[in-house]
Length: 90
Image 1 (cartoon, rainbow, N blue to C red):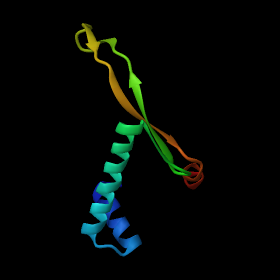
Image 2 (tube, rainbow, N blue to C red):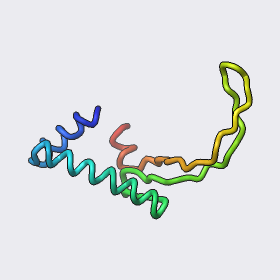
Image 3 (cartoon, one colour):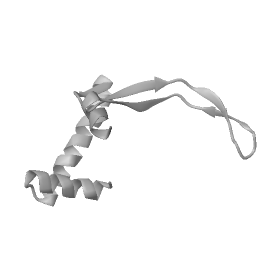
Image 4 (cartoon, rainbow, N blue to C red):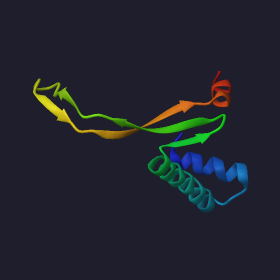
């Protein structure tokens, strides 16, 4: 499912126009991003928990040349699936 497909689904399910559904989806994504930046965690009970996790700097290798490369520290987003979503998929 693409973002466009999801916007269409939201519009059909809620009766919103596609424009309003797109705005709602954008606001949701911005809210999740803001929550991760400010609090480090966003929990949507039963669906998923998004967590911002600090990854330390490390050495890696360029697979093509074998050269050692320094990989900088970064923040990565992780997602843990909730129980209701697990049940829906199985």
